[in-house]
Amino acid sequence: MPLHSSPLATAPPVLAGRRPVGRRRLAGLAGLAMASLTLAACGGGGAGGGGGGGGEEAAAYPEDDITFVVPFSAGGPTDTVTRLVAEPMSKELGVPVVVQNVEGAGGTIAAGQVANAESDGYTVLMHHIGMSTAPSLYPDLAFDPLEDFKTVGLVTEVPMTIVARKDLEPDTLEELVTYLEENGEEVTLANAGVGAASQLCGLLLQDALDVKLTEVPYDGTGPALTDLVGGQVDVMCDQTTNTTGQIGSGKVKAYAVTTPERVESLPDLPTTEEAGLAELQVGVWHGLYVPAETPDAVVEKLTDALKVALADQNVVDQLADLGAAPSSAEDATPEAHTEQLSSQIDLWQPIIEEAGVSGS
Ligand code: ASP
Image (cartoon, rainbow, N blue to C red):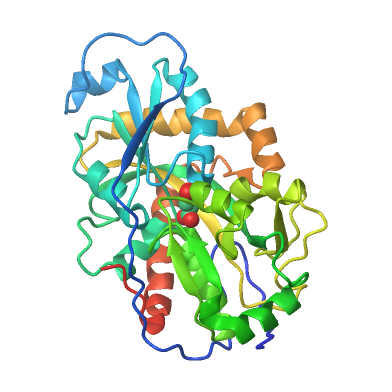
């Protein structure tokens, strides 16, 4: 087992001391099922459609419902974060916000859909770290994250946890590592498809141990966690926003959190570094996007509403309960978000190329 101590801040993963991994293709993309769910929103919504342009329409924005597109299943971590901020943003903007889950291909179906939506501020994408890995994972990606969107601002960064069905033999991360090395492809690893944070974290885990597990893709880690609780799959790497409750109630076994520091809401859970797997560190940053031609005045209104939402005490408290924190006001800006996106695209490209993973 390679045990390196590689310090790391927040989002970037550490792969120091990685052993080369054979080329492999992860097949089995999630289906394209779409589920639409409506979030209760405050009143104040006006009549009239969005319209596409600048000037007057931007000044009047918003006059109608805004749709927040979530690229994974309802009930999962991305959905949870979206619904948390959508409510105060809805209040601030004075119109209802509808949350729509557009699943498939590790989040790339939803992103492609929003890239081609009207640039009127009425279709907004919530996406995470997957926005920066998609260009490397999908050679034929239907959109360019930097060219086809405007960034609204960063939302939050969420730690990941390594969890397993509760009756899996190993009790510690060290034991789990040995178990995975001994059982390899006999072990099933759930994720939300190529491009999902869970898939990325699972990739880093396999890479660190130089093992190949059997990946089981879902439309989101909401349903994947349900199967983990039910014992249908063995192991998963997923965000605290999804796993905290099930860890707390003992319905899954937890081994470590993938951040440099322990998470307050899970104080007994060691970090990967403490547990001897320092090279597996990753945080899942999230941001809001609109289509590229969206007027700046509209983006500004969304950014302002995002900042209000992130300062909302209920959002702060609920995120804290789930092991996360809102992005700072400086990070909840298009500038900081674009910088993060761009640097993360550069960070992940060589790592994914070396791992030889592809979603298409
Ligand atoms: N965001 C999760 C992931 O990337 C999936 C989900 O939200 O359901 O694995």
